[in-house]
Length: 219
Image (tube, rainbow, N blue to C red; front, side, top):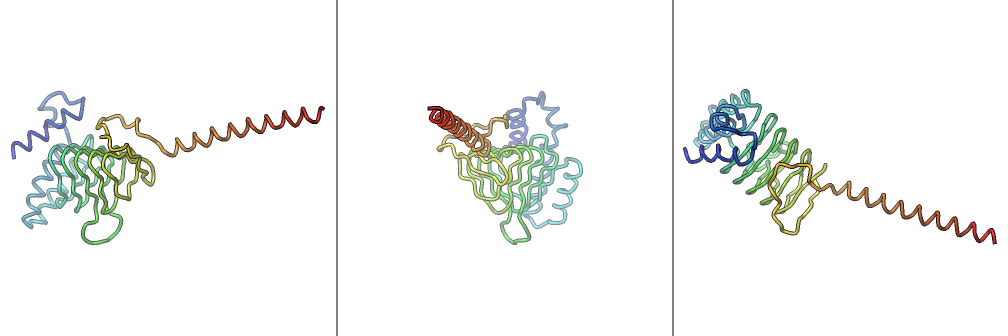
C-alpha cells in the first residue's frame, strides 16, 4: 500500500512542474486526494460494501470536485491534474501511467447494462474538457485533444481531436506525453486551408482566362 501511495506522489512531480515539495503535494492536490479516496472506496466495493463505498466516493466528490465511482478500476501512477469536474463512471478501466485533466468525462451513452464506460490503456493522455463516452477502448500511448468528444475506439499510438473525435494516426510512432495541448493536429483546419489554396488557384486561372479573352477581342 505504501509503495502505491509513494508512486501516486511521485507521478505528480513527473507530470506537474508546479509541484515543489512533498508536503505541498500531499496536502493541496485534490486529484491525489480523490485517487486515494477511490482506492479505499474500491477496496470496499469489491467486498460488496456498496453503500459505504458510495458514501466515501461522495464525500471525496464534495471536497475535491472529482467524482470517481467506486466500481471503476484504476491502475498505477494515475494522475489527475487540477481535476475539477472530472467524472469517471462505474465500469471504467484505466491502465497504468494515465493522465487526465480538468473537466474530463469518462461516461456512458445511455441506460445500457454491463460494460458501458470506456477503457483507457497504458500511457493515455486525455486533455482538458474531453468526453470519452460508451464502452470503447482508447489504445496505448494515445492522446485525446482538449474539448474532443470520442465515441469510437481509438487505435494505439493515435491522436484524436474534434467533435465528434477524428483519429490522426501517427504511423505507429509513440505520441509524446507532454502538457502542450496546442500542438495537436486539426484535420478540419487542414482541410479548410487546402480548400482555400484551391480557390486561390481557381481565381488566378479565371483571371488569366479573362486576360487572354480580352487580348483576343482586341485583336
